[in-house]
Length: 172
Image (cartoon, rainbow, N blue to C red; front, side):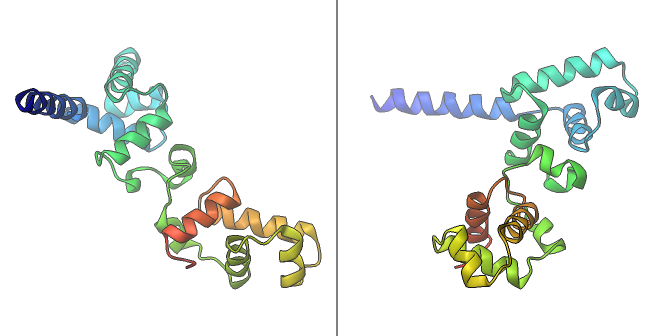
């Protein structure tokens, strides 16, 4: 039994290493795709034919076991093959929607009002309670604050923003 598990683990680890092994041309294609270029633009940048780049992109999809470019870029970042710096700012939300990006927060820090709103939400307060506590003039102000917080933390909703704030140690 011990030998079987040892054999299985060694086979599995070799299989895992083999899946993540990519060539330098595949890595450069990943970086070009992460920069937000289309397949046609990638073909022009690399000096290859469109069909060739399309085929290489599909091979990358198979290797990473994904079906779209956003998942490909996300998995490449998680595998450490490319960094978030390779992804252009205007495409970060497109490709790494749910990843917490501390460098974006450093560029556009949260205001005191946004921090207070985020803290109150983390305490379980409802929107009406928050409006009363903060003395906001309307629901629209609260919605605006929520939208700004979500954009600055690169999150799709306020719940995800609270989680990101805890991870980034913005609130305790």
